Image (cartoon, rainbow, N blue to C red; front, side):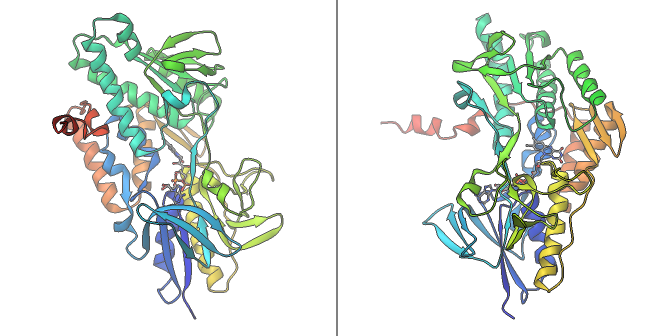
Length: 437
Ligand SMILES: Cc1cc2nc3c(=O)[nH]c(=O)nc-3n(C[C@H](O)[C@H](O)[C@H](O)COP(=O)(O)OP(=O)(O)OC[C@H]3O[C@@H](n4cnc5c(N)ncnc54)[C@H](O)[C@@H]3O)c2cc1C
């Protein structure tokens, strides 16, 4: 038989795990696996807050694709269109003209992007927290703001530089806020000009609680912990505008800030608009529990999807519920999907994905955390320790696990690195100036 061609669109949590498993289970006579992603690495997003806080080297929170996917063909580029009717995808490589790739099976896993609202000033002044670039930028930016505040004699400039605003109280927002504040507090020991009370860390959350992934009491505990650290927690409050960095909130308050981080949810990748896959009202690809794409009650043959971009029924809940967008589901769905693709290629029936969400673990800075796993609630150091061991066990590859543990061990004995490498964001500036005629 001719080998089947499996095209994996996106090498994140779903794509990397699915491609790895497919390439291990299927011989080259059975299938070839092609993986397309514009990034040369998979980003282990749950480690972004720690990478931003400087507890893990940013390089160690990503997994190089070419080293992990040696049995696959890796294409550096973005899929810009999928015509499943013709079983063809259009790929825009990072250089050169677009090309078409034909396939027998497609794994649709481009994930999600930040879900924004048309808030005046947000486009110009906001930044998301979903990519390694954003995490590194935010770290350098926050540390730079400490330098700005220490250098200025103008109290308004200082106040503005030291006001940090995070919008959205899910785990990404809470962890990013808590890790950044922890890092800045640590860094202040080298800034005799500044006091901890000069900093203002604001969380703006539209609902009445944070961390909707855990029970209310755990959300309340988290708020208490952040308040103890003198953070300004605004529940039931919306960001109304931030034109020129002037933050206006729905509770009437207004203040200036040069740091506005948007972590208020995600929506499926807009790339899906250029495909002919069926979508639900939230623009997710509609799937069966077997991870096969489904159009009404018709299985779309050869099309599979999972992760943040897919509506996968949650069989552990009442009908009409879907799996939440989380790494926990993404990784498990990827494995189930790969096994199902192997089954279908070998003429067997696919099996339904069923996983009861185990709970959530969130770090609130060094030695601080909150966790609710299989109903067991933990706070403080045990929760933080659980967060670390869980994610260390989940990050792909032995190499990454060792590097992350080495980073943590070094951080145990040495003081945290709190230097801003802001030059990274404009490395040609000095040379361009020197070479100016
Ligand atoms: C800061 C943060 C912390 C988090 N913490 C947790 C946590 O503690 N626990 C948890 O369970 N979940 C957590 N999550 C959520 C979790 O990371 C996501 O649910 C998970 O990454 C979804 O996996 P995915 O494969 O669908 O998407 P992703 O992992 O985002 O992968 C999508 C991939 O597709 C690629 N791509 C995009 N467009 C294209 C295109 N056009 N062509 C080709 N490739 C494309 C991207 O480059 C990317 O590599 C966190 C998320 C964030 C942002």
